[in-house]
Amino acid sequence: MTLRYAYFPGCSAKGTCRELDVSTAAVARRFGLTLTPLENPGCTGAREFRAISEELHLTANGRILALAEEMGRDLVAVCDTCLLNLVEANARLKRDAAARAMVNRALAPDGLAFRGSVAVKHFLWVLTDDLGGEGLRAKVTRPLAGLRVAPFYGCHIQRPPSVQAGVLGRGADTRPALDRLIEIVGATAVPYAGASKCCGFHVVSTEEKIALTMSGSHLANAADSGAQCVVTPCPLCHTVFDAYQPDIERNRGRSLGLPILHVSQLVGLAIGLAPEELALDRHVVDCAPLRRHMAGAAAG
Amino acid sequence: MSPSSTPTTEAPGVAPGGSIRVRIRRFDPSVDAAPRFESYEVPRTRLMRVLDVLDHVHEALGVDLGYRWLCTSKKCGTCAVNVNGSPVLACWEEAQDGMTIEPIGNMPVVRDLVTSRDGYEATLAAVAPQLQRREEYPGFPEPLAADDFAPSVHLRDCIQCLACQSVCPVIAQKDAGFAGPAVLVALAELALDPRDGAARGATAGSVAKVFSCVSCYECERVCPAEIPIVSEAIEPLKRLATAQGHVAGARRAAAFLAVVKERGFADGARVAFQLNGLTLRALRLGLRLFRRGKADILGAWRARRAPGADSVRRTYEHGEGSP
Image (cartoon, rainbow over all chains, first blue to last red; front, side):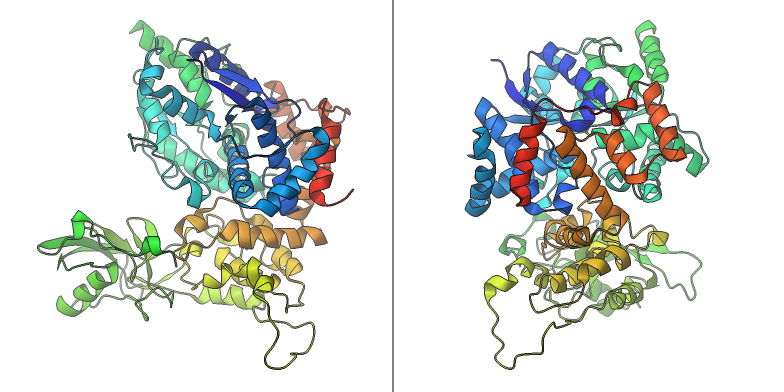
């Protein structure tokens, strides 16, 4: 059975985190997953559309959901904030007939309609729930033995609390999905304070200090707990941790040098994809220490 | 209050008989150099709450424990404590064997489990949390319709227990000047009140610093009254402040929308440039990203558009309410 999804990469995966789009596609190919990108989806609005108008937030997300409905497939996002916007709008438009009518009037000129027929998933859950532990393990050819990985969920994948309560541990296995994934690829999950907290991305362009204090504390905790790298399901968290890591190091007066991996890159390495296929060279923080660890593990 | 939070079945850990052990953080800043943890053994009782445990430690064991409570029924908001690291109402939370009880975070400890509400009250006073009428009170009975209060109805469940303030990562940064979720809930309640005529959007933007909210929803996660704090208090205040448009966060939202409408996608470099102009800082970050193939700096100036940008813009204009 082929698993087929409508795919919404979001602006980060098409912009500053293109390596996320590249590695997601490579991993999906290896597992035989079909991710079909939506055409002209627009944007979920980050946290900005809702700061302008609730109707705009619902319309923009309704458009993306309607495009997935037209395709007749569940919608997959690779960004925690895109996921949250889509999950919230999907729930609201399903239960609120007036909001649904408003959105459908806006979508009618493009021949689209929201009907509420698809679910919204993160690519992480496609891997851990739809493929499942056995499906994943079957393709692990290069276990990341001995690699100490700090899981960082970001906050929006767990929200809103009323909808996603308990989302960190889904299904029969109640351990958080990232912890399970890290074990499946043969690495070791490092416990540390901050794994389910916020990175501060949504204020980094206007209040950099607030964001970098928060994310700096998480990275310092991860490093102090012995992590060799961090893995995150969110490109916005990735941007604060990776692109701003030199600033974080300067602010805190210590060097961190922690490579930040996307979920797809961690899995990709374990299923034998080459670092180039995962665009590991497109990070600000050098991933060479990871490659050396893997080379050492292979040789030893 | 949600019926789901009413204890209907007894968890195996608190069945009557035997006893439970709890750790409580003790600290009197007027005499102690540092906080310490003390362990107590407490007999189990039926449907035992955290508050029952504290009462037993205080009354039966004779410990001079500092803790605060008043109504014992989820109304007064004075008894919030951290249980195993997360804030709960002592009067409403089931006791667990092996639990650690500490004061809630982000505010000074007065003694043991009692924290100071002074900072919160001063911040609340600064946003003028009283109804300011546009017109004179029309007399009794004042004609008020339930529909007029629908947007703020959940906010009125707030009991000011400060669980939300205690987990807010922005309040934790004292110099940020952020008022915090509990203050924003109070402010939104007035802003959404049809009788109120004060410029609450301006206060939210410049005094309460609503745009410093990182939107992490930690406040909602811990709220014992289950108030949708982000979507029903913080976002509406941001909208009011955006309509006035004079703080950086409001400009950020406007710049973001303008770029998505123009290009059909959120071009991060373009948004940053529109917002902050060409600063040395922005250039340094831009170059750092450019070197790793992560940013198309020139693209921020070049007029590039997604193929379906017109259709995206049309959809959004419907959503905004313009033709």
